[in-house]
Length: 419
Ligand code: ATP
Ligand code: MG
Image 1 (cartoon, rainbow, N blue to C red):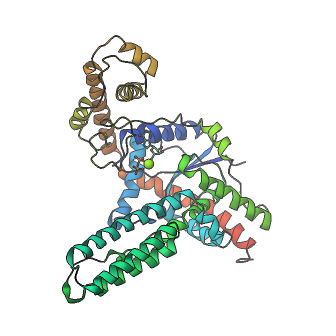
Image 2: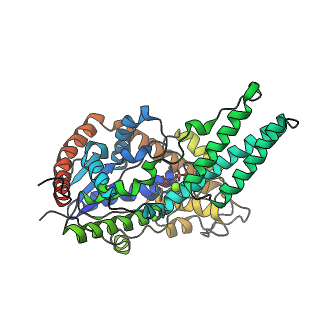
Image 3: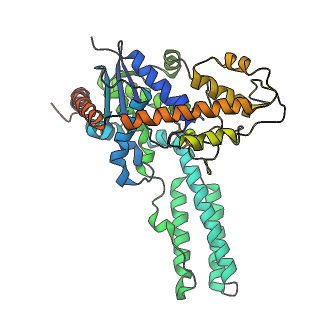
């Protein structure tokens, strides 16, 4: 019998930070190395998923290879025969299955996906800022011009409408269309020199809307039972289970239904909510989309610079070292980083620094550790043999095409595309 499949996507690149490394990369690599005996491990680069929102396409190809290199530098054993590493778009069955599944998924189902709703909301927010900016320009520039005042009035009306329907993409699109019409109308006589963004910007893409279906195809093609996902993806996993059950009911046993989320958590040991905090603002987590990056240790930071960031970490004025994320988040964050990088327990590290009445020793130790860690990681990354990574990708892609095509053929037959 074939081994149960564990499947996970590798969305990573060099801009990752220490939080991503400790909270995601390291556990994933550990899992893959440990489970490879009893399971088939599918690690794939979701390259088709990477432009559901706009990206720099000239970088995508190399980025996919670099993603794998980051995982190898973290310790992933690519030599293991049960570990398959592949690029999604190199297995055309992913796209084909997604197209077939599309016709068995309701538009309403996709509209209910939280992640999609959140993306829409944030894009509406951006458009609203743009509208505000335009309105200010109108008001500032020509008050006497009735034509323009009329346009402002109309815009205010549209704005009311968007407020009511702000979650509905269609009205957002109409709203933007109207705005650009107004701008074009009032651009007569070169009064303004405004770039009309909405003419170029398509808003949220169908790719983004449909992404959970592609994700379901990614999972179902290989009969994966275990799919470690973060909280933001549990709804998509539930959807995958639903569509698998729906298809099985309609066409007979086509797909292995992945385990329910609760069982996934039991199997992987639900991440203990590890959250490395931002060094400057320890009340929030370290994030790659942080504006300044001053409190973030990036894996690509120069080790000396990163050490400086640790030395200027925000602490408190209590002058005692204790593990208390509520009252002393900065100090506790440093203790946590210390423990994770040294492999000691949090308890041991806290005891070790227990009697100290200032934070400089702790900071110095953590700064030194971070410096060593980055030196080591960056050396490992530059030593990863790209040729070997590509060879592994190609070998896995051949095997995965074989496995995926088997499932796809079953589905094609079931829906009447093949005999
Ligand atoms: P963004 O700001 O773009 O959301 P991010 O830094 O939050 O980026 P994600 O790409 O959202 O990173 O998450 C990648 C993985 O890293 C996820 O598994 C997430 O749980 C984990 N992760 C993100 N930030 C931290 C953190 N500060 N500490 C521990 N794990 C983290
Ligand atoms: Mg995030």
